[in-house]
Length: 217
Ligand code: HEC
Image (cartoon, rainbow, N blue to C red; front, side, top):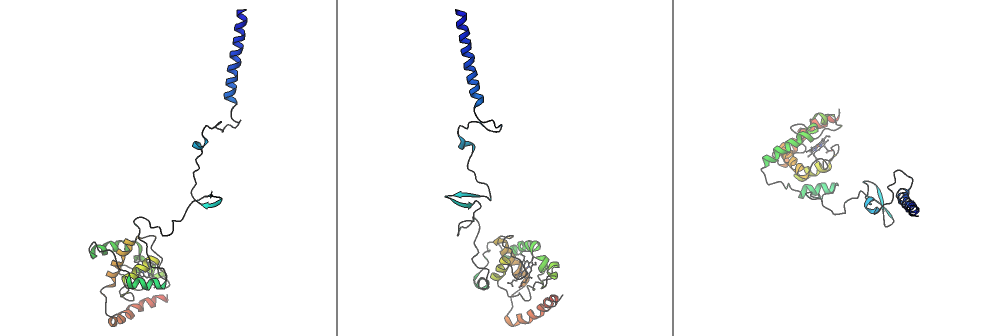
């Protein structure tokens, strides 16, 4: 009788173990990569957004890469408020002044010369005559700083470096405003001392001749 009970108990225990094991193995799909039952799915699957993709916001498809809100000013960045138009150019000439005054002019000129050697010399030439190797190949060589451009005001120099002019490309994306102002000091050094209008007009024609001649080549 006792033996009989033992057999029943054993049968029960094995059936229970079998059930539990079956329970463990049977949950989830047959898919090998399936993680089975997910206890807190949000923790596994965060709604992270990929760069340069679109996603839905309130039923509208939005681009993830956003333009900054209008009027936003990045830290350490000064907006340049003169537009790239003829009007902006002449306004810059009238009212835009070099804000770099903390150090001596010579120091800024030296720093400007280094930048000039990297970004400008191949077109404008070491002394600003417009005789750089690349400048000479242009359909119209750059005018001389101490000739045609002798009396160009600092605001216009800055404006033209910023937006470019004619065959000269814009430099706003390569040079910070501070670097551009240092260049202005150096360009002014190459312009030489400002002259009166009468003396300037004779100089201008004299210096403009080689420029006009090189245009023919
Ligand atoms: C690809 C050749 C090239 C490079 C590089 C270049 N320039 Fe020029 N630059 C020119 C030409 C050409 C002009 C004449 C533009 C015109 O008036 O049509 C010019 C004009 C200018 C003027 C006179 C703008 C005006 O308002 O009349 C200034 C100042 C000047 N460049 C400064 C610079 C400085 C500073 C750099 C370096 C950051 C530089 N340029 C780089 C070709 C170049």
